[in-house]
Amino acid sequence: KTKPVSVKNEDDILHLSNDELPTFGGVLTPADSERFLQFFTVPYLRIPLILDFFANGDPGRLVALKTKSLQLIVDAAMFEPGMWKPSDFFEQVTEIPIVSEDKLQAMLSTPLGTLFNEIAKSPDVLVSCVIKMLERAVDMDVGKYTEKSSSG
Image (cartoon, rainbow, N blue to C red; front, top):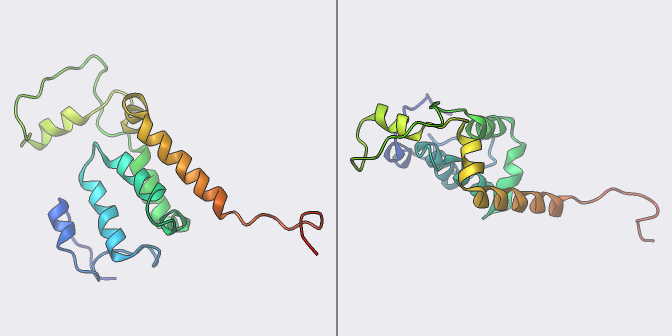
């Protein structure tokens, strides 16, 4: 729509006008687009928030995944390896909030990637959202015409 806008945090997204928010080919409303973009500002919660966004709420959000640009963004967010750290790495949090971006990234790093970390540490949200999305996808299936299954 317009020229690219630099976004570094949630406040930057909240200050975007409707014209500056992407609608991904008109499949997301500006409000949904704003909410979706905000998930990318919270790295550790990104995966469950994205899955919940498509699994719950408006069923039209799941249909929005037909858009290639949205598919690519969700794919990149889900399978982004993120920062790596050895499995025996341990560092205690000594200050909240963590102001240093480098220290924050080190604390959020994982030995096997963010999706695997989510599966290992908190599978309930992930599994329930995937099941809900599959159930909604099956509900959207109109079936297949055959003479035996049609009436009349």
